[in-house]
Image 1 (cartoon, rainbow, N blue to C red):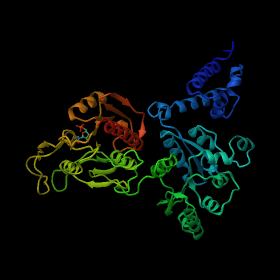
Image 2 (image 1 turned 135 degrees about the horizontal axis):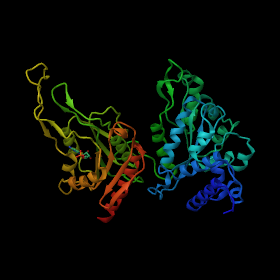
Image 3 (image 1 turned 45 degrees about the horizontal axis):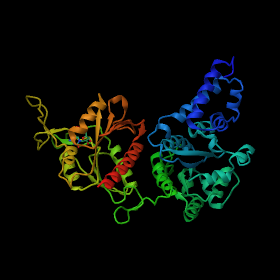
Image 4 (image 1 turned 90 degrees about the horizontal axis):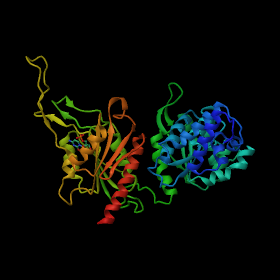
Length: 500
Ligand code: C5P
């Protein structure tokens, strides 16, 4: 360390040196990625000082790289990174790309971005660069970028190219084979799969020119996600032209990345045609999800706030891994996951019957928030108010579906039984006790106290409790919790099969 170096610089350099050793990156690469200055570390080591603003940016970069939501959380370090090139077009839907980048990075996907000139009017390259952790490219003839990462290299290094939002103009350029800006030049130079997410005014989408271009691109093998029907950014405009939402984009990206990784395609129909290369091909998976409604009289019922989203995401991911999936779903306002057999039920007793009917299964996941109690005798007619005394509800216990199936006779008990534990206090302690009491192999525990927003929300912080111990996962969206859980389940099943 240089004597007399200012404190901020000295501390920063020391942080950087630790980071370089930890991540094994070169000082030049680090400087470029952190603040686009390949000489940063050399200058600091030579005694140069930095402004507080630069120090903040460098620290933010290191924090982002170390973020528990990224690959370095130790959970999936064995998974090789996959690289995706995101071409951001000029439309209001460009803002969705920010969320998309975050969700992709959570999934260990490295994202490099190219922005069109028009895209820079809607979101800034600075913001996109901060989220991707990489310099954003936007000029075809930028000397630095062409020298550093030219359009051919951008095209070559990606496993998949995603164009979002794909404007009418971008689609026209693609269909016509133009290459007069970086985005279109990359698209011309690539031999990798391309997924486009169109977004435009409904009249532009329906314009015969756009439809001609779309037909040409389909014929060229370009993949499409959306557009969707919905409201436009323009006041009072609605129709077909909204860009697909982030979960749909992720659902379209995942199988294409998988294919690019060399795995077989995600099967469209389950059963006979299931892809043999997938980790759950040939497996049967049972999932319970959603609340149950326990009738009091013909119009009233006991219920809870479960949305069914977590269980539906699990079913979807088991399906994406090639399993034959039955989802027993309580009354929830969510669409049927594609390719999954959905049995909609109302009460806990119906849920138990449907779950038993779905056996045998290789894995059973009980994500439903089953009502613990039901009224002892349901009234045939609506209970009237105004009687002498207030009505009294006598409650009796509902069957415990998880416990029943976990203790099924050998041959009927699924080899891997996974329960959920939603607690508002002493989460780990209660969950560990629950694993034993219910006979489950694993318990996925989470804190559902109202301030967490988990019930009905899109994100979840869970702990996986197994016979070996507790694994705490970072905060993730429910879809990612589902993906990780099903990948773990596939691994466990493979180990069980190998041992028998
Ligand atoms: O007992 P508790 O409701 O906390 O247990 C939660 C776990 O048990 C969840 O996996 C849930 O789906 C399952 N369960 C069940 N049948 C019940 C109650 C809970 O399958 N009647």
